[in-house]
Amino acid sequence: MADSNQSLIDCIRDLRAAVEGIQAAVGSLHTKLDSQQQQRDLSESADSALLDAAVIKHWYAVTVGRNPGVFCGPESVQSNIYRIPGGYAKRCDTHEEAVAVFETALDAGLVERTTYEVVTLSRADRPRSTYN
Figure 1: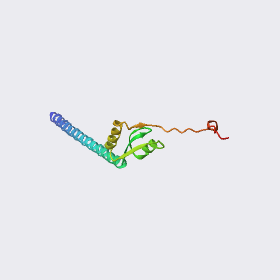
Figure 2: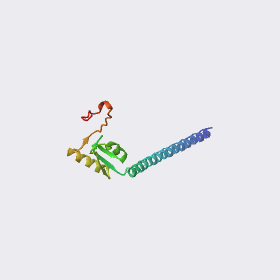
Figure 3: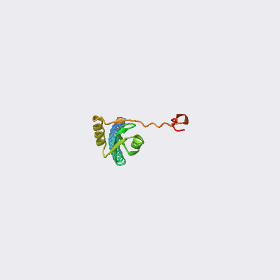
Figure 4: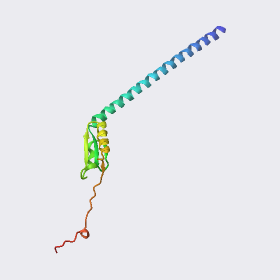
């Protein structure tokens, strides 16, 4: 009976060692998977930044308009200076260049926020003429 107890104890020790080995292997796999996920996230982030850079081809410094500032893409600029007398936007290749242009204009006192108001007149607003 002592031999069977001893063999049972040896079997349990072997199983415990095997379980610890499996747990260590699983922990190592989790570490590798986390590392691979982080690399994938960085790669996707870099791909997204490259795509953004490819899509945004020009930056604009609006110095006279409804909302002066630095904008990407012509769509936001067009509505900002449309029908504004003297509305001005400078196209730049980089964000840094557009910021430099805007800040230079700002320092020179050339940045103006302006509006364009359309007033519809009625017959009551019609000026009285001297010929009748």
